[in-house]
Length: 62
Image (cartoon, rainbow, N blue to C red; front, side, top):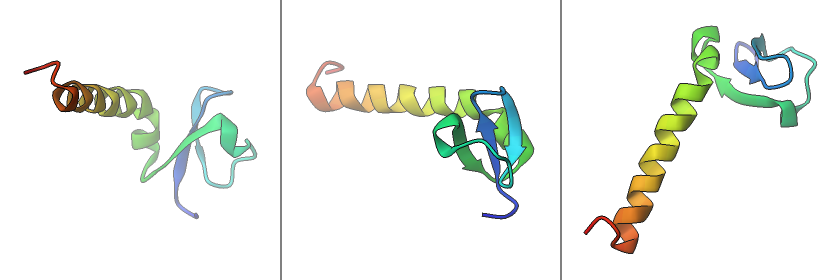
């Protein structure tokens, strides 16, 4: 995917789609370098939402 960005977990930096790291070492794709650099915030926010939805579904937050 040309123009996409990934966060390399091995090198701890944003890399373009042409990077040589294997998929298991990457998070993404992201629409920009800045978005790739903010991967952790996005993942944490998504996980918090999923955890809250799981608690609501199971009745823990009732």
